[in-house]
Amino acid sequence: MIVTIDGPAGAGKSSVSRMLAERIGFQYLDTGAMYRAVTWSVMQQGMDPSDREAVAELARQVKITFENGKVLVKGQDVSQAIRSPLVTGAVSEIADNPDVRETMVALQRSMVELGNFVCEGRDQGTVAFPNADCKIFLTASPDERAQRRYLQLVEEGVSADFQDVLTTQTVRDHRDETRPVGKLVKAPGSIEVSTDGMNFDKVVDQLETIVIQQLRI
Ligand code: DC
View 1 (spheres, rainbow, N blue to C red):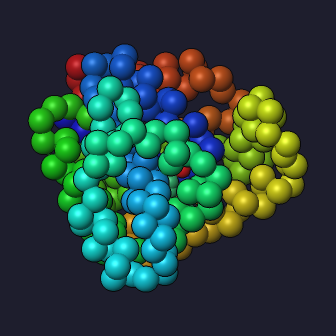
View 2 (spheres, helix red, strand yellow):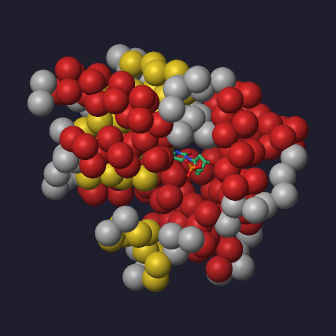
């Protein structure tokens, strides 16, 4: 069985999806981490991110695996490195590459063959798993998403400016919503959940109720 959770950056998808998967006994697939892992490899190789052919070839060659919640590239743990601001700043260009997307979607489909999965990303309910058993579109208003991100940065001791966070988010949203392949759009048949004003536990509770109803588990 497959549950897809798509939505914009900052809607809380990752933490919510991970907890939901744990509660219902499914595995969790973080597809954003896969695009980040390719981006990290591109940077490691000193490759030009705009060289579409070379980047596509690297995506086909690189071995991305998940192990105990960690992301590995050719066996190396890159879980922290792929969250760096450098990777975050460069990942959109890699995720825009249709050949990279084709490789990642094929890999996602093969990864879920053996088990039940909560698959989280932007195109999981539209492109990767259009026949998923339950599709969720998790969203929140731009202000709320930027506010959460801003507070997270402050908590991490990073000096941040709310307007800057909001501007960066707007640019990323636009890129996610307009990429030629795999753009962020509410999948047909998906259930939209807005997390505005809801705390983490409440969001997970609501999703769990929806999923249990839909999957009849
Ligand atoms: O969710 P995230 O921030 O880790 O995603 C990293 C980047 O990858 C972001 O720019 C959106 C993109 N992405 C995508 O295009 N398709 C997915 N299925 C998942 C993420």
